[in-house]
Picture 1 (cartoon, rainbow, N blue to C red):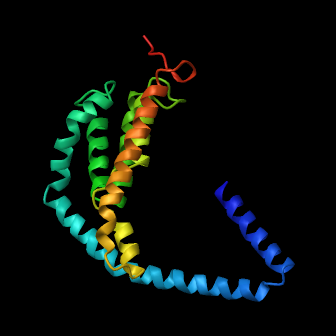
Picture 2 (cartoon, rainbow, N blue to C red; picture 1 turned 30 degrees about the horizontal axis):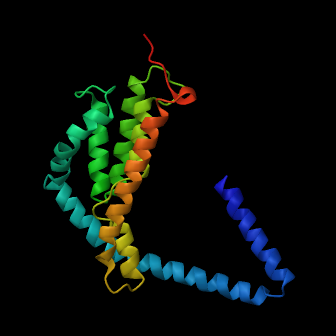
Picture 3 (cartoon, rainbow, N blue to C red; picture 1 turned 60 degrees about the horizontal axis):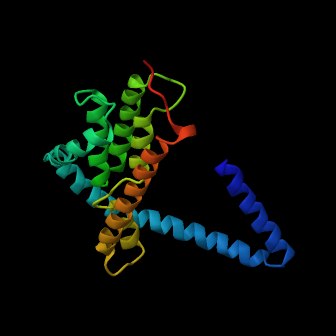
Length: 199
């Protein structure tokens, strides 16, 4: 779907430029944007290597495990249908902890593992369970304490203080997570969205 949307935007832009006699401007802007994208990507290599390296050291030092212990009591209340000793609980907690540290690659793998584990508890394999929906809401709005990617982008773009985004990112992610989880919890108890437990 997104490919069709982008293709439509490109075609619309080309047609509009041709109609208004701005093809030379369109061509110049296209090459300038491509050049800027390459410069941005190269500039990101060093910043991302530094942050991801630091986060990997923190992960190896046990910071992910410490965060896991911190969020475990909350997880038990958010996922009452998931047994505390089930592998799904460990995968979800590790995924959330990795997201909090900005470990995107690790978080993705752990998120996929968590979904597989949750599916093993799902009595209706064709429909997402309440636990899967809540986890998806948390994952999509991932609370991030250290947004390494955004910091890298700001640094590459020449921001005076790239790390100043940390506070606002934390507030926005936390707010989004609270709204998403609350909405999912409310909808789970409303008629057409309520899933009856099988005996």
